[in-house]
Length: 256
Image 1 (cartoon, rainbow, N blue to C red):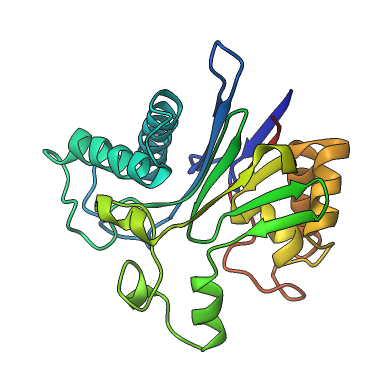
Image 2 (cartoon, one colour):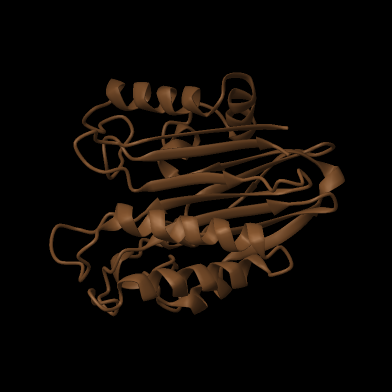
């Protein structure tokens, strides 16, 4: 079994709002991974005294614990429980009804000897390397479709007809992209926040298969380093327009 992960802040003077972790049971018969990308709010009040990095650590830790210890519970239910636990941890101090309350994208995967389950919510990415069919990206493409239509995203966050992130509403898990693969058909997995996947999606340095090959050969930190090099080469976003010059990045690579 090979498990590697890396994460780095986009700005070293600001807390990293991404989260990445893996749980491997003592039996060695399975495992789980969780990757979150915290949504940085615009300047101003978000109704929370804790901040996004606190939220992603809480939510990610709860999701990893629930999905790892309750292996017969669907990942959607695991996410709902993790959201409920996290909301309870700060409902007495924070306004969770605020539209900018801390929130995150989610990638989760869980495996045993028989199957590999997955859940993807919003614009982080899960890559699955199949033994016969190569690399398959699992994407929640709502944001891409809305952008292609020229829609403003802000009013469409967590709204019907829009896109969804994990915040304080546990029912959002029903909006996630979910599924499973037979374990025997999968060689490896990789989960990436959009700060890492911009190597493909923003800079066009390769396709998903190229990205996976880089992860397999050089590891997650090498991918983040290449993203940083591309960002530094275009600091003003003139060649590759993007919302942030540098973004938090997190990657997990797993050969279960």
